[in-house]
Length: 400
Image (cartoon, rainbow, N blue to C red; front, side, top):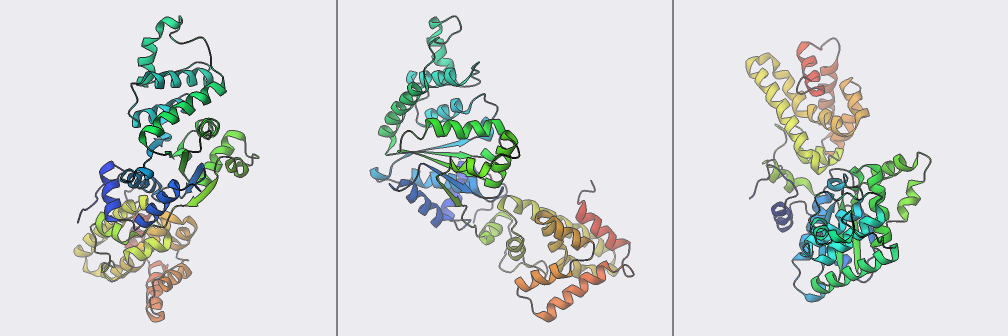
């Protein structure tokens, strides 16, 4: 069984996690891919989820699944575009078309260079072509056209659309029946660049119904980005409706197998020394996939620190139950719910403890015992220097 010490969305990890169904999303990936191939699929789809919920893995696994299809009728060209990685570009249309050209294996083609260059001329007042090979190559071939190294004839939007249509025809005829562009990390971009991505794709890429665009985004965050660009009174909800024909929630991930492999834990039996279980607390508080490693690392670090002190002072054993039953809940609240966290560290979180252990299916008697542990720990008369130390560690695990 492979252990994932650094679960980045690399090509190897995408393939392996898809084949092993690490997040129990394989069926959802296949279903989504089938929908993208269907004649009923709209032009633009938003896959919506919180940051860290695994959107990048989901869309890349979808692209991987589509790439494995052997039936000629299912063939398509899939292109992954990281908007955040490109948001230093003056205009996104340049890097988007270049990305498609490279994936299609046409980066040295003169017609691609001409297309991108002419789009740049039409959309930029002062074109900057940082790091785009096709433009440099084409520019060298056409330096004689003007004193500035590019044509003085600026094409109209209609001409650009016609060139894009010709490009789509060539690429799709060679690589399959459709082009699927996955646009990721848009909600992390600078506001002006995010708006340009949306509007360029709307104006130039919806001209061919064989082209499908999948945005993996945090819709709420993207709304804030839009408001930051257009103003707080701007209706960002209606604005985004213009660009997304359909909004789908990211499928829920089952984290049991993920934790077992990634964190090297037997989560079916590991319950923090008979305290709260790993999966229960992650599911109850909704800790996202991206945050699981950080949560587990901080949790383990706290146990190591306290256990070392306990080994040196047997009288501190009375704090072991607090660490087993209460500490993980406080830490999870710190990650996901600041209001609950504030109540818990103030000794006012009995209801929070009670509600969680009901969810965890503890008996009423067991819950009462756990709540008593919590109350006694924060009791001002019983509290001492060591309990204060534990709370300080929870708030600042590195002492910073």
